[in-house]
Every structure is written in structure tokens, then in C-alpha cells.
Image 1 (cartoon, rainbow, N blue to C red):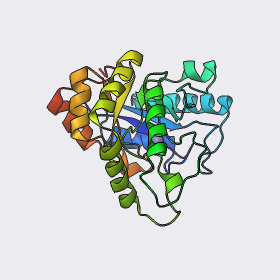
Image 2 (image 1 turned 90 degrees about the horizontal axis):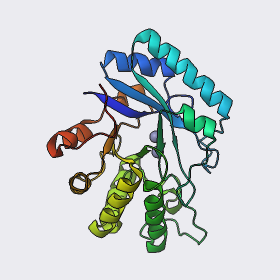
Image 3 (image 1 turned 90 degrees about the vertical axis):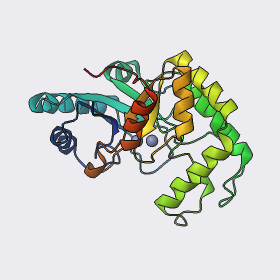
Image 4 (image 1 turned 120 degrees about the vertical axis):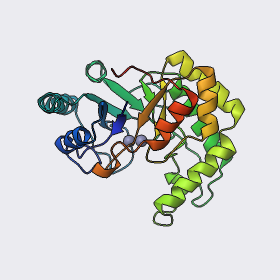
Length: 255
Ligand SMILES: [Zn+2]
Ligand SMILES: [Zn+2]
């Protein structure tokens, strides 16, 4: 079973067109992919453009007709950040039209002062943890990269870290703040909402111990590369290994 349920195109901040993504999926013989562009009109990042409902739904229709032509199974969906309480901020129409909704903590509502370079700000990370709990227990199908791409940008002086350094930093923050007591509470929220925990290809997260804990609690998983370029599509080695090793179940069947 080869799936990749988290892919971006140039409809948001990815490089390839949806046609290139579908062609690539076909070439890789993927059983199912999901095109999940950013759709979040509250995102403070200048890289995330604002998209209207009509434009999104027209995009879904284009994806579906090309996927049908190519006989490739493609789910149409979005990746979005919720408000602090975990509530989605999309219309019913978008909700109904989306086959997969990934919620990710891309930013945290936090009004106190942050010092750039001081990464271990306990109060900030406590706020993050609360938002992640709220989101995990709320609407949407998949929780995107719970231990990868943490919202570290407000703590970093622009241009001072490489991609690999930021990844390492996220790992250290996960080890420091996302302990077992917290993770057990997180698992409870996932069970309550029936949302899936994403095994994230781009960052190779979460830690193996987290997969083990989530599996033992009965939490379901999703597998997504978070590809922004063609070459990243289907790069989900760690997730696939983890699913096999711990007999983890995926949040929906892909037959
Ligand atoms: Zn994301
Ligand atoms: Zn993404």
C-alpha cells in the first residue's frame, strides 16, 4: 500500500502544478494521494496567499477531472491552522467538499514578548501544547506534523538557521516538552475526535517512542510527505516502517 496524504502544489506554496503531481503519483504507482494545499485566511505568514471558497472548489474540480483521466486516486483537501480552541475557520461548503482536512499548528496565539534566539521559552511552548491538545480533540481528519515543523519562527532571528538546524531544534523541543504524561493526554484527545496522527515524511517525525505509545492507545495514523517539490512525493519511508513495525492502523482504508 503506497499512499501520500499531504502534498502541496503551486496553488499554494508548492512548486509543481496539480497535473505534475498526479503524473508523478502515477509514475510512482501510488495507490492514493491527497492534494492538500494551504487554505487558511488567518495565517500571518506572507507566503500563504488568501484563497476564496469558489477558487478552491474550482481547483478541486480540475484535480478530479485530471485524476479521472489518468486513473489515479486523488483526494482533494486542505491543510489549515485552527483558532486556539481548535475550531476550524472554513465554510460548510468547503468542509463538505473536502475529502481530507489536515489541521496543523502553524502559529500560536501568544501575546507576550518573545526573545529571538531564546528557543526554550516554557510559557510559549506550554501555549503550543495547549493548542495542539485542543486541535487534536477537534474537527478535521488528520493532525499535521505534531512533532515536525513546530511553530519556532517567532523565536528565530530570520536568516540565522538552516533547514537542518531548525529540524534538529524541533526534535530537541519535542524531547524537552512533549513528555509521556502529555502524550497520553494527547492520545486521549485523538481518540475522542477520531482524528489521525500524521507520520510526517519531510521531517521524519514523530519519535519512534511516540508511535509506539499512540499505537498502544489505539490512535490511528495518516502518512504524508508534505512534499512541496515533485521529488518529495511518496518519501514516507519512516512512516511506512513504523506502520509495519507497530501494526499501526491508518485512519481510513485505501482499497
Ligand atoms: Zn504544515
Ligand atoms: Zn503541508
